[in-house]
Length: 269
Length: 281
Picture 1 (cartoon, rainbow over the protein chains, first blue to last red):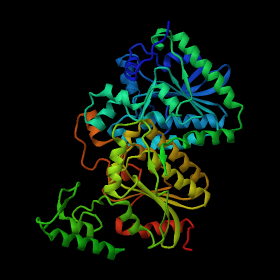
Picture 2: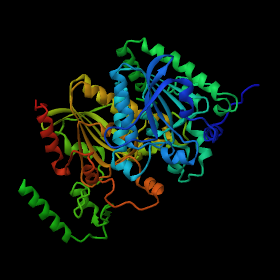
Picture 3: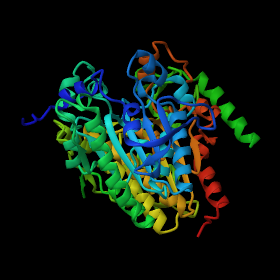
Picture 4: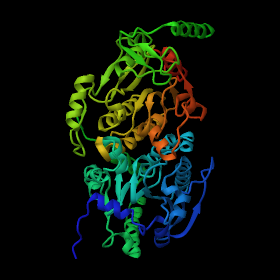
């Protein structure tokens, strides 16, 4: 059966499906010996971002991931995957640790965006994101990022500076949520569907714009229809990319990482 | 020092006695709501005489009061943005704005001298699409940092921004990574980066190069934050205190080194540059 091409809005609905797998479903099927590590050593532990060490095909790796809940209780705990600064600072602590021990880093992105609240502002949401972006850019170990569902705004980019970016077939990645886009530009948050049509946020759009390199195929009807199959596809991609990047000279890798982002922009002079 | 303080107090006292002439154009301070004649406000370099709010200047005005006369050499002055996601009317809107503001986009970059010390300088201008960051802002800021790195020079960036340029979609988000990458390399080269936060510095600019300065200066009463005030109020369903996200609030929370009044900015920058070994040539 031929797969039909889904519109951006249909994909948005699909990734909001209540059975859409989260990173907690994927980790046991992709990695072994996973140990979750908690806390930013400064202020607290943010459940919206988890991190830890594990093995991929026997090779030690550091895993950082935004986590959506599978029900309301889980979502309350992880704040619907909207991180506070502590989440980003925990991620930074763990990737610095990865650098120290020459472990490659794998980031899973799945967030509507960084949390917008008083405490988040007071503790420097902007500074936390900025610092991650700058530090990831010069981190001396390979980084691969995968967008699992929603890649929303700076909150996603804080785990999105990498050597290669992959998108699950139905994942989206955008400057702001389609709702936010409609609200900012048209003062009408209900025009989410129209926003989806023009924002260029699908996996194919991102590859065309030179932001993502790979689309990871989802089972027919979406990732939730076959967890084993989608996990296998993600693992296959990661195995190939991690061993490829680990063989590269780190200075060459950093140069390529800088250039990957350096060339994005559309202007004339 | 004490004399300065005395003059400021005296000046404010006098100004408070001033009644605006309502027949002439007036300016209403967004912080204290007091009304002042526009020509008087301009004369005070756009600082509110009642509450000391430091208002929004154009990039040209800012350069004029900051650098040595005749020392400014502009970079990339003809760069204009395209329309990466084919957003309807974006090209037309920009053409109109270029005409009305005399700017090509929301940032002016170049090299200059501040009391003899050579610097690379970038100044954002909120009069152009609220200084949102799209391809041109991203590219010009990145090039400014790259130039400073190659030439072993310090850089001063006056930030102002409503955040990412929505009309450029995901391409605008990626400018955060591009600019921060260039800041990181400049940092590794051991050169000084001074950020001056001006009104308003928010969103993707706060979450990238604005927060990465070795020294972060802010002007009094300017807005500095990541999320917009209304967005937060919408999330938490309550009104935020008036001082929320103002420079003084952000300093108290640990994110601003020094708050510097406009009339002292040039000498402060000069002192800091010299303290880091960038002496007058």
